[in-house]
Length: 49
Image (cartoon, rainbow, N blue to C red):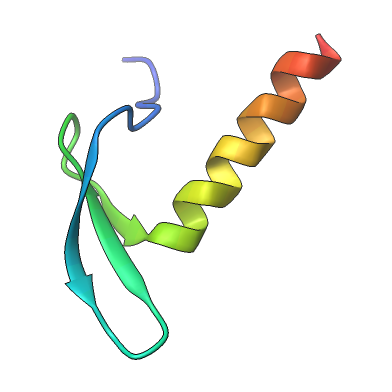
């Protein structure tokens, strides 16, 4: 099964300095800053190819 690229996410929780999102496709929950990092890494890999 291919790795989910989390195309659609929704905010599920907020704390003082963190925001958590859930992928509507696979159900993974992670910190929104991790999601931004994933997007940046994917862009780098695409540009290097």
